Image (cartoon, rainbow, N blue to C red; front, side):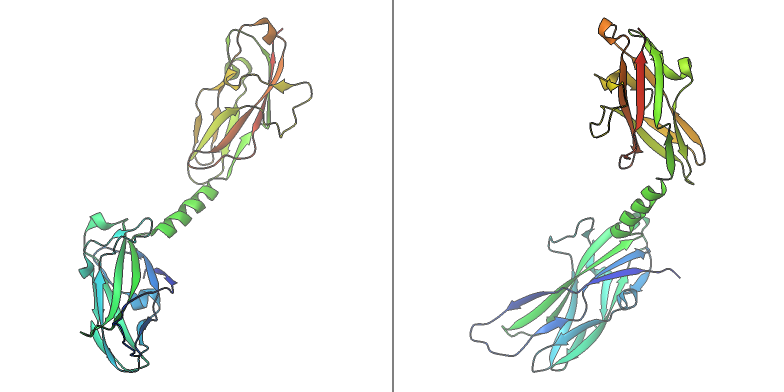
Length: 299
């Protein structure tokens, strides 16, 4: 049996139209806040009392019994982010739809949600309005409204947590070496580091799923001390990655391939430069563990 998640926000909007001079002691209060239902399925019916584990109670705060009617409607533009207005409020039904509640008493209702058996609804998130109002023709009347939100499949909050967990799982990888020394680099020529010196940046994936890692050549971060005898490379674009993305299968090692191209100028000969290569997830953030690339150009 599937578990359905429900969250309650105990809020209610009080809407009153009061006739001048009226002094009656009346009022309604909701014993049921906004509900969020996740994991619902198309073609099924749900009792929100069971899904939310809280009965839909309406309190008559007045000093006389009153008839209360439950109605459902499309939201009036106050949609919560990631939710859309319910296409048809008739998906909801209250049992009973009308109930007489004694003075200073509480009446309880069952709210039923029947979702059409339509595969196009899967993965969508809907919002509806439930309203409890006094069934009266008097000028003095009170009504309260609450939101109902539901998702056919995982809801936005669940999806957010799933993405976060996924990203954390994908952090199970390692980028080496911490420092990559490349000497004898000629100026004025394209220098293939793997071909000439059999050196690469290695990305080991220890996670159970394939991993996409992005690499980027950056200026030297001044917060990090330069290795003794080196200065920051004047132009990071002299160090090029053959691909800025490395896709690595589970329990495999991928490689970041480097090409160095230093302009053919006398001042660039016999120099010792340092650059940084940052790594991170293509779907998210950078890691604070760059690879130091130490370059010596030929005299």
